[in-house]
Image (cartoon, rainbow, N blue to C red; front, side, top):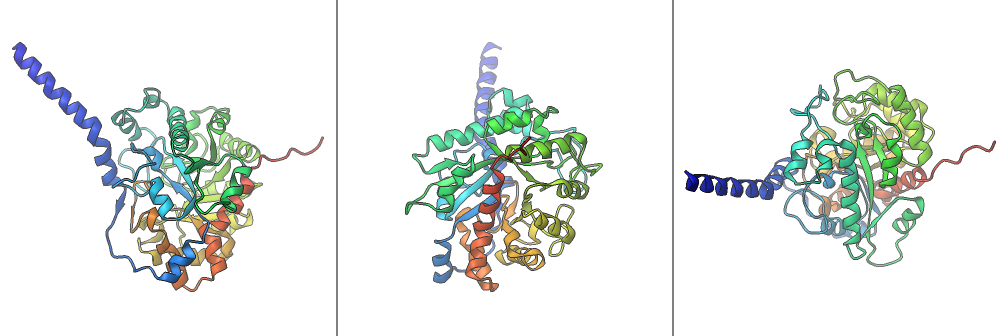
Length: 392
């Protein structure tokens, strides 16, 4: 009996080691997919132009997953070597802290959470197993550690001054810049003062909601799909004053309207699509696009089927063209949602595919430079400056 117990204990130990070693990677492979469909051959002209661009992607969820972003990975969409290969100047990394079980685009409640099991399986610090705020703080720590260990290849953006070398790199091999955002302010855990905690941890962009209604507003995928609550309104006001950029991605349509109605600074939709080219519950209507443009903001177009109704570069550009033609090229940006449990045609190393698709669609070099990063640089640099208080 004792020998059996020892043997069973050994098997259990091996099983646990295997689970913690392999399960997180298996889960990620199932969630972050490249569909393997053919891609066009890149022309010399497209590659030459792409190599001169300053590229900004407004949304990637790499921090959620258990892998070292400094190493080339054989799964997912983003790591530092692939950012360098894709000529990305600035990547916004989002902190995802909670997603509902059986997550869907139509109706989700807040009474379940997939991320808890992932946090445990990835052997994250114990504090992250129960606290949404601590999950964001952990993601911020991961990003800081990656930058510190990168030998200068990855730098952090926290002030408008940090954007200057991104806009005008002074070397032939500039580092990739990284900025921290959060996907849904449920990580405030009901305390508006935790906005300062997030700011101190490096958060410089924040989505109001994610896949469920929270204490600040309704989600496009929630049950009630309501507008801003009093806490939500206060959060928007504080974010603008502090220098945290307001992100309406995943907001309900009522939430979007109310944010745009009160915004004093440019508003971002970091990742998504447009109703005109891809009808869907979270894609922006023409009225909403006009509202974002009226604030001076930008719309990051995503690369997955629910955003672009396809994964081909031409599908992405079709959505971009609609935004350009409706409100102007200065409001178009990239919002991949790479590593965000999405299926795409390419990863960040292959971003030249978007450049080539824009060229083939007849966009000018000036327009391409704006879309691939110039517009995002303008809005981020502006939004990072704390608002000056009026003189007494």
